[in-house]
Image 1 (cartoon, rainbow, N blue to C red):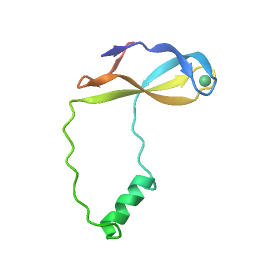
Image 2 (tube, rainbow, N blue to C red):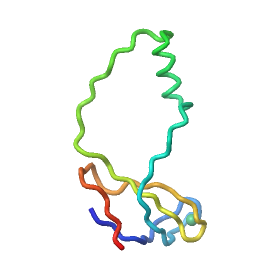
Image 3 (tube, helix red, strand yellow):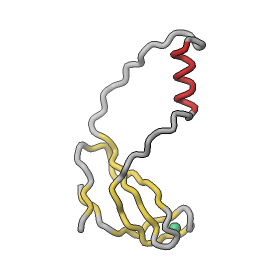
Length: 93
Ligand SMILES: [Zn+2]
């Protein structure tokens, strides 16, 4: 999947369409203090019933994300591009 280097997209900080540069997505390390993580830790400790592993159906591919930097306010936001796919996003030069 190929994507243009610059896109004219809506910026939620400027509240209008601006020119945005596309950068590859880099995952941030999790803080471990989110509600889901705390709830899971409590369940493991034994405060909440029994913990049975849930069986999830296997999904084919992932939804690819890109980082967008606004040219006006310089803020970075992430955006999902396209549907579930095994192909990686390539940024055109
Ligand atoms: Zn902006």
